[in-house]
Structure formats: C-alpha cells, structure tokens
Amino acid sequence: MRARRRLVGWGLLLGAVLVVSGCAIGGDTAGEFPQSALDPQGPIARSQDRLWDLVFPIAVGVFILVQGAIIVAVVRFRDRGQTDPPKQVAGNTRLELIWTAIPALVLAVIAVPTIGGIFALAEDPGEEALQVRVIGKQFWWEFQYLGDEGQGVVTANELHIPVDRPVRLQMESLSPAIPDSYDEADPTGSRSDQSLAGVIHSFWVPSLAGKQDVIPGYERIMRLEAEEPGQRYPGQCAEFCGLAHAEMRFEVVTHTTEDFDGWLAAQSQPAGTDLEGLAAEGQELFGVHCVACHVIEGHPENNDQRVGPNLTHFASREVFAGGIFDNDDDETLAAWLRNPSEIKPGAQMPDLGLPDDQVDALVEYLQTLE
Image (cartoon, rainbow, N blue to C red; front, side):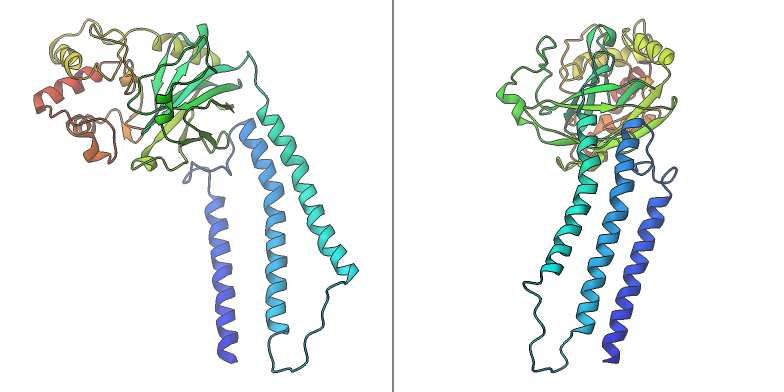
C-alpha cells in the first residue's frame, strides 16, 4: 500500500514538472522562440491569440476537474474487498442535468467567439489588399505579385509586404516538375491534371497568422497583416510533404509603404547586365546549365521557365534553398551548386557535375544580381 502511494506521488510530481516546463517554454517567445503563435505581431494573429486566451484556461480547468474526479474515484472507491455492489446513479435526474448543462455551457462560451472569428477572418480583404499568388513546391515557396501594382515581380522564399495593409494570399500547390501555367485572366479556372501531381503543403507564419493547407488542384485564400516595419518573420511548411519538409522555410519581410513601393520597383527591373570577368563567365554558364529551370530577367538566354526559383534578384535576398542557407555565404552556395542534395537531403535540383572553376564563376554571377 505504501509503495502504491509513493508511486502515485511520484507520478503527480512528474506531471507537475512537465506542466511547469511547458509553461516556461511558452513564456519566452519573443526572442529565443521566434516561431511562436503566442507572440502575435499583427491584427490577424492577435485575434487568434485572444481566442487562445479564452479557450486555454477553460481547457485547463476542464482537464483538472476531470482528472481530479478520476483520481478521487480511483482512490476513494477502490476495491477494498467489499461484497456489496456500489450505489448506482443511473436515472439520477439532478446529476444528469448537471453533467449535461455544464459541457453545453462551456461549448457555448467557446463556440460564439470561435464562429465569429472564423467568419471575420474568412472575409475577403477586397481590392485594397496587396494581391500575392503563393505556390508551394518541393521544397520551397514562390511568391508572385499580381496585377499592375505587382509589376510582374516574382521571388522565392521571401515574402515582402507593407505594414498596416492587408495582404491577400492566393495559394496553390504544384509539382516541382511542372512549369508555372498560371492564367492571371482566370485565376480560379480549372487546373490541368498535371497540377494534381503536387503534394499538400501548409503555409504558416506563426507570428502573423494561423496555418492554411495548400492542396494540389485547389485554390486557397489567406490573409496576412503586419504592423512593425523592418522585421523578418520566419515561417515554414507545417504539413509533412516529403524528405525535406522540415527545411521548407521562408521569411516574411515587412516594409513601410514607401520602402515597399521602392523595393517592388527595384525588383521589377532586369538584373546582371553589363558584366565583365568571372561574373560574365558565370552568366554564360548559367545560359548553358541553368535556364532550363530558372529565370533571370535580363539574362540573354532567358526562356521564362520556372520549374525552379526565379533568381532575378538573387543577391538581394538573405536566404536561399528553401530559406535555410544565408545568401552571403559563398562557400555554402558553391557547395549547393556542386551537389544540392548533399547539403539539403531531398532537394529536387539535380547534381550537374560542375567543375570547381564553373561553380566559382556561377557564384560570382549570382552575387551580382542585386
């Protein structure tokens, strides 16, 4: 008997330690754990966080009451060798009313703000929003800025947005082997059978909004909004999509309205013109080995293929390869060009077998693409 009580005591102590540890991890969210939905940085994330603030204490209270009742029942009504059957409560009107009314009341309290929040977040932000098409591929994200305002700008793994303005994300998934076949005149039109060859991804920027699954053959709409300019908010795919799923990341970069307009205008211009020396050699090699999959606006051999990321302003980005490597690290970039799957297992880019001198020239060329 004493050993059983000691075992129950250690079990309760272990549970308490786990609960306290979990609270400690969740409490330090601003710096050490930037991908936290508990540190909202925009109005959409904040409205979701308010729902969490309501639901979580209720859930904890229900958990403690139910687990406490179970423990009391186990200890108080345990088998002591009694021969008489315990008193039955079936048909007790008062008890049945209580355990029916309390859960119904709890669900009503949660359901009203939850349903209201779902409808509010599902509202289309309208024409005032920045329109961005988001494509999930294995294993990276493409962002296309739509309409006249977007000026045809395309980026990979970095989503730049202005603050204090809604962003309407028009999301879908495509197979990495399928070139972009988007028809802007009919963005909600039917997709080819090939588009169904993609896999399910989930777009998630914890600090700015909840998750949105991105499903082949379907279009999904999501809203984002940030408040503080000059920030980089990490995001990643939250749905297992293959070997490199954990390394399918991206960043949301925030600007003031003026800075964003300037960034968009700069990104709409060709890059890498009037090159000399090693950079010019790299430009020529890019036309031989890379244009079948990548676009660089301004490259003389550009054929508008986008199986891989658009690299027009590669050097102006801070990350590449699904947002996991720093752009300014030439050694890592060279290692990527030599054999991508060696440093990012599961990468779809093939090993081209390039000699070191050609790799060096391509690195030099890519780093000129400001």
